[in-house]
Image 1: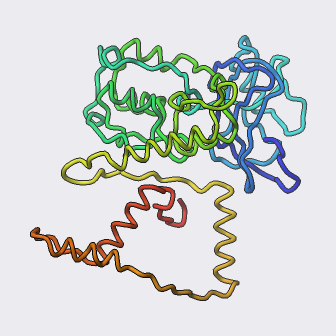
Image 2: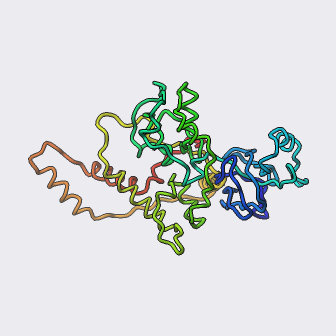
Image 3: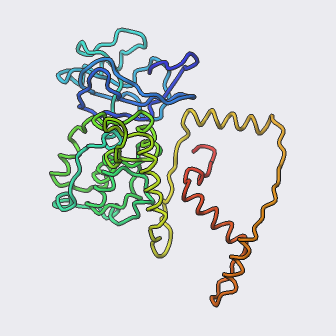
Length: 345
C-alpha cells in the first residue's frame, strides 16, 4: 500500500485493472488506491506476471501492507504462500527474485476487451439451475456489459446474483460463480472463456478521470466512443455515454405489474465518504442552523393543472401531484441524488 500523502496512514484498493495470469509491464496502471481524501492510480515499476491479490476491494490496510504479488510464471504457489506469510512492510520483497507489486481482480471490472460468448454458443450444453433462471430489466441491475450478455445467453436473472465489484457491481465472474455454486453446468466454450485470463484494461486508451468516472457508473469503456486526441476516451465521452444511457432508461416503458424487487444498489461507504459523513455530523451538532423561504410564481403550473382537470378525463391532479412528478423526473436525470442512508451503506 503506497503512501499518497503526508497524513495518509491507511488506504484501500478501489479497483483492480489486472487479473490472475496477466502479464504486467513497468508503468502499467494496475489499481486505484483510495484514501480518506483522494483516489489515485497505482503504477507498477516492475515487469512480470500477476499471481495473487492479498487484500479485497474496499478493505482498509495500513501503508506498507502487502496488497498483491507479481512474480515469474514459473514460481510455485507454495513459494508465494511462504512469501505472503513472511512478508514484513519495508523489508526486502522478492518472490523468485521478482519484486512485489499489487494486482488482481474480477475479470469483468478489469477489462473492457475481455472475451464474450455469443448467445447461441453460450446456451448450448449449459444446464441452468431453476433458482437462477428468469428474465430481468437490465436498467434495474448494476452489472458489467459482459455480465449482462452472459446472463442473457444463459437465461439467468441477475437480480438473484450477488455482485462483488465496486458498489456491488456484478461481473461476469460473479455470474459464473453463482451459476456453478447453484449446481449449474457450463458449456465447454463458456468455461474456457471464463477461465482465460482477461487482457489488461490498459489496451483501452483513456484519461484517468474518464476511467474513474466509467468505474463509478459501471460503464464498459469498450462501449464508449472516443473523441479525444489520439483516439483516447475523454471525460466528455463518458459523460455523453451516461447521458445517452439515462435518456434511454427514462423513455423505456416500465414493465407491467410490479416493480423489480431489487431495483437498487447497496454501496458501502468509501474512505472519503466516511470523512464527509463525520464532517457533516460535526456541522449538524456544532454549527448554528436557520431556515430560509422563497416565494415562487406558479401561475403557469396552475394553468396547466386547470387544463388537465377541466378536460373530459376522470383524472384530477393536485399541485402536490405535479411537484412529485417534477421531483421524480429530476431524480431520473440525476440518479446519484436518489439515495437513502441507513447508517452503514
